[in-house]
Length: 473
Ligand SMILES: [Zn+2]
Image (cartoon, rainbow, N blue to C red; front, side, top):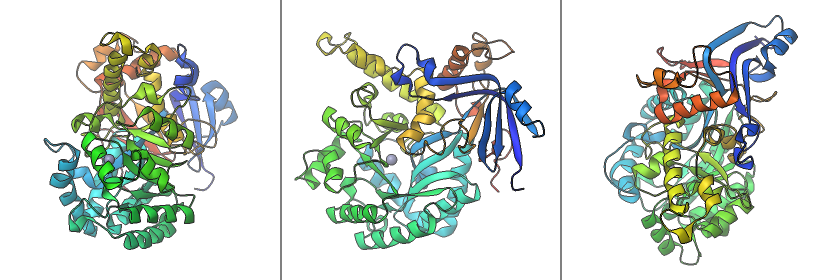
């Protein structure tokens, strides 16, 4: 019913700033309302604040009370592959071999519309079950997969960014697309999907090793003709890939230069990984307003390396950072698991720089920035991800006017040991202060998994409830 409102009552936790700007008092970047109320109208946040205040302003609105939950903005995944649902967690190879052995043969199946449609249902069911309401996704080089992705996202009214994925070398014949076909099909798909409902389009050169200069030039042309579109790619994931990129682009000084040369590095540009980017490249990302999707599940699974979170969050040239599961290189969908691995990557980097390995390389400030507190972690999964992807005017926290996507977290679910573990922090009354809520969230990200996601709401409607089948319209 147009104009109808509804409201959620419960305990809310979101962010109003970047915690790395508040070192030593990160809670200043967050917002905690123990007994709050979120009023939703037409899928948008109409009012938000303490229950006692907000309920007086909206005496007629029907209220759903989510008790014993922490309600956070929906998670934002900055890097995921729609056509890899079925091959997540494939054994035993590094990036370039893994692509040839497992990934390209599977992705070729997505030319079949029925297969792609089935996969899209599995894909979005799994995302919602993990608390993710928005993603930046790769499809395949077949437009069928891109169409099925967007059509399924639209059925669920989810805010997504994706695009036809361009690759014209370094893959079997059935996985490539010519630059001319890529250009023509991308244009058609942009017309059909970009800013239709909640769909947004990303011009998507898969990775520079797999794209000829001609393909990269077609991407430049598309960006010039559709400047409102996003750009999605991979960069500096793996050392062999880095060496291969130097062979294919001998005139470029480094991997980032390939994207600069083709006019792509800038706002709304996101590249997955960036594990092996130099300090100078990170500085150029920062200056350009470009983003990196940090994908620790995948970086560890494929042995790619440790992303230098502390370096990328240097206050003098901070890079926009999202987190991504990178399923199927990443072996899980939920950002809860991603944050766990991100924490471990950060701790390894911390040790490399705290002086205990090599006193000459000690950098106490960078070492500290690697440590993923719950504030930093859940910021990356929500408002930070929105900022990285240039979506923070639409979503990412509970500000009035934003889209009402959120997740209800059960801090006691997950492993059998969880309830007793969390009872160290709170009793049955739940968190009374922001620091307790943050500690519960730390417990969720280090001990928990997707079982902690109890409900996921999209545009003000419940789209997933644990222990019930996901609602797939
Ligand atoms: Zn990827």
